[in-house]
Length: 347
Length: 242
Image (cartoon, rainbow over all chains, first blue to last red; front, side, top):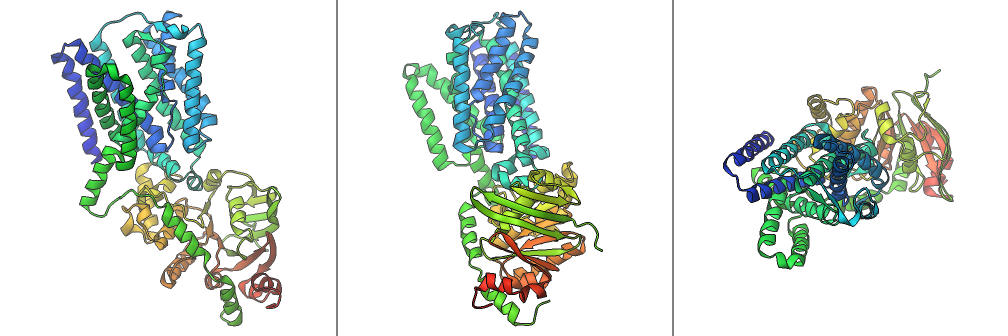
C-alpha cells in the first residue's frame, strides 16, 4: 500500500510536469498552479492537525509572513527573488519557533483560539506598519511567466510532500507525533519530549507554508492584508484536511483538489454570491465531522481494512476506559488482607 | 551490607495546596528486588508513583536513582535513565496498532526503525501479544491492554519498573500469567516497585512491602511481618479488628 502510494505520487508529479508542454492556455496553468499551492497548504496543515492533534488557525499567518518577507526584501531591499524567498523561509521558521513555545502549551480549542488570535494580530500589524504598505498592500516587480511559476510551485509542493511522507510515514518521527496526539502524558513515560516534538512539527509545518507564501506573492505580484493574511487561508486548509481525511497526507491532497475545483467553478459562475461560498464551506466541514469523521480517504482506508479482515479499525475507547476504572475500584481489599493474614499461606 | 540502593526516597513530601498526599516518605529499593507498595484507597500510592516517575516534582525531599538525584526531572528523561512505568488507568494509544504502540517506546533504545521493529516484536512475544500485533490498541480486552501497558514500559529496556495495579480487574488465569511475567522480568534483572490491591499477588511475589496510609509510611518489612503488623491491620480493617 505504502510503496504503491509513492509510485503513484511520482507518476502524478511526472504527469503534472508534462502538462505545460501541451497546454499553453494561461488561465488553465494559473488554475493548476493555484491547485498545487493549495495541496501544499493542506498537507502542511495536516502535519499539526492530523498527526499531532493541534488545529492551527495561524497557518494562514505563516503563509502571509512568507509572502510579506519575500515582498519586503524584494521591494524595499532590492534582493533577488531566490534570496528573498529564502529569507521568507527563515523568518517563518523563527516566527513558528517563537509562536510555538507559548501556544503549544495549550490544548484543543484553546490552542485553536490562541493561534487564531495571533494570526489576527499579524494581520493588524501588517495593516498599521509602513514597511508592509498598510492596507494598500505591496506591489512586487512583475515577472509574468506562468510556466515558471507552475514548475516552481510543483517543485516545492512535491518536495514538501515527499519530505513529509518520509518523516511522517517512514521515519519514527510520524509515530512519535501520533503518540503525542493520542496521549501526551502517556507518551512522556515512553521517553518522548512533547514540547520538543510539537515545536519540531510546528516548524516543519510552517516553513514550507512560508515558502509557498513567498512564491505566491511574486506570482500574483500584489499582496495586501485582506487577501494574503485573511483567516480564509487557514479555514480553507482546514476544510480540505478534514474533508479529505486527517493524519493521512493523501486525504488532504484529495480534499484540496475537490474543494479547490469546487471553489474555481463556484467563482466562475456564481461570483455574485460570495457569501454563499463561505456558507457551503461551513456546511461541508459540519457534515464531514458528522458523517465522515475520518474524512474521505480515512473512510476508504477503513472500508478496505475491514474487507481485508480484522485489521486496524480506528475507534475511540474513552468510554471503555471509564468502565474499566469502575471495575478496578471494586476490589474488596480488606477482605483479602484478612483472608491472607488468617491463613498461614504467607510466603 | 547491601549494595547502593537502586532507588532511594528521602523524606519525600508532595502537597497539593493544603492537601498533603505524601508526607515524609522514605524507603529504599535494592537491585533485583520486588517491592510492593500497599495501602488503602487514597493513601497516596499513585501520587508517590507520579512523583517517582517525574509527573510531579516532590514538594520536599529527594529521590535518588543509582545514587543520583532525580527529583523533579521530567518523565522522558527518567525513561532514558532506565525507569519504566505503567498507569493504573491504562494509556494505550487507541488509534494506533498494538505493534505501533510498542514501537514508539522502542525508539528510545533503537532510533533506527528496522531495529526498533525487531525489538518491538520481541517484546510482543514476551508479553503474549504477538498474535494481536496488527489490531488497534482500542480493540484489546482489558487484560490485553494491561499487558500492552507492561509491554510499552518493557520496550524502554528499563532497569527499574513501576507497576501500578497491573493485575486489578483481571480473571484468575490472567492474574497467574501476569505474575509469571513479573517473576520472569525479575529473573532478567529488572527491579520492580509494584502497587497492587490484590493481596494474593502482593504476598506471592514481593520480597518486601512498604505500607502507606494517609500519605505516610506506616510500616515496612517482609510480607509475613506486614501481615501481622497491628498498625497495618488497623489501617485496613479499623480499630476493633486490630
